[in-house]
Image (cartoon, rainbow, N blue to C red; front, top):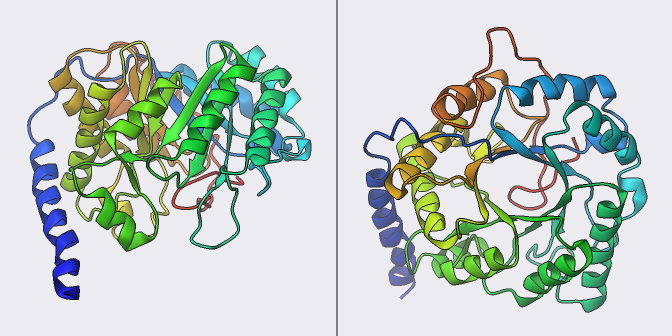
Length: 356
């Protein structure tokens, strides 16, 4: 009996691999690329005092040669009871002042989150109404401080989780028309794959399309964390990104922004991850999906994460995504400036909020 149960994920996995390889076939359309709606996750150093105005000026140069419209600045995490102490973001006021001065055309949102299910280890429970109220209060405080919006990254949120949806509704009520953005888990790539994957790793890695759409309905923008795929080949990873983008393009209305996560980091947790996953492969997969779907304005890449990104990651973004798109700006030779901080990427769970 055990052998039969164990064989189910294997059979599903082989079927998924074949489907993903097919998704990564063909040539994307010349027009498929940035429309100037891309995003970038920024580490905690920007709000805790380690970054200076000079760093913001340098980042402005890099962003000026990109299609990036949104940045998410790590300003948490919440404590396990949902509190967001102000000492988590002591320099946020100065950072926002510098940002308005040097990067006025790029929106800046507070990136907030915490582990919400860690297989028995300490975590934040969104099922607790008091904890949810504290989470929403923390988000309200940061919008009042001057952030353009809130970007949530709670991991791992189970498929069908009602309390998470309540957080989104309650946050909307207190931030009004400010940007409400969510880093989402991946969409179930094939029907039936979610449950055995969750059984194998102890929590949901995938959301069903129905639950993904419920999250979309409550937000302005979703960024699918299309990395940490565990796939061993670039062709499979690129097909995985294409599959995620294809599914999402049919689920996200055109008046909302869909972002595809691109792995600008090099700590994947498995030895082959850095070889298989790349910004270039993510861009190619996104372009293939967009080419099949047709032009769409509110679509882009979201680069994870500034402090781990290498110059090669930025070159891949420029070469594979910005130069091919209608909304980005080609960077002039010598126009790059190094504002990254080399560091390993810490996690909430699989891939979450950093301290750098």
